[in-house]
Length: 260
Image (cartoon, rainbow, N blue to C red; front, side, top):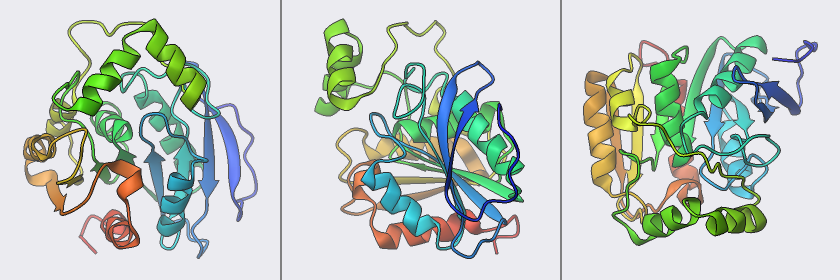
């Protein structure tokens, strides 16, 4: 990372990080309100969002009651360079943020991902490791899922030149035109099976992108490491998070290895 070490900042700080595949991503550190450097939560957002979005700011505000927060703009989103690869190379972005959190002096680092970010957090945990806990909210269980109307529309957009242009113009998100190689990158279920840290899978019964079966398969693959919360009346990802769920998520994330 191309940064100069500061004297333990007590206020929010934005930082550009260089990933190990030479992509520059935007990150922001929001210290815990107590000033504690015990735990940092690295938050990976959903597709077409970014760290300055009001939904992410609201969630970060709840998390900061008990932990420091590192928000990142995944590649192709917000202030980050590059193009979104829809879950493939974004693991490098999360690793850069996790490394920065460690460098800032946090003893423990956990990841929290929403939708696209949930898949990225799972893959990061399997491919890089180095985090203490992982929470995946409203994530997919497989690639190229087209079983819902919203996912069919999304595929039509990201797989066409005109669709990608519309996403870039309307949502300021740059999506790659490069197809994935075969065999496809490690999917969320396979990633969950490789984890050796606690995994929390959160999914709503009103999710209109991915059915609850995706969450069940991810949690089942994690075996004894997996915990599943099926939330009645909950929709999809950041937009559906309410204070009660945010508090429960925070309490789960701050638990140490002994469950305290």
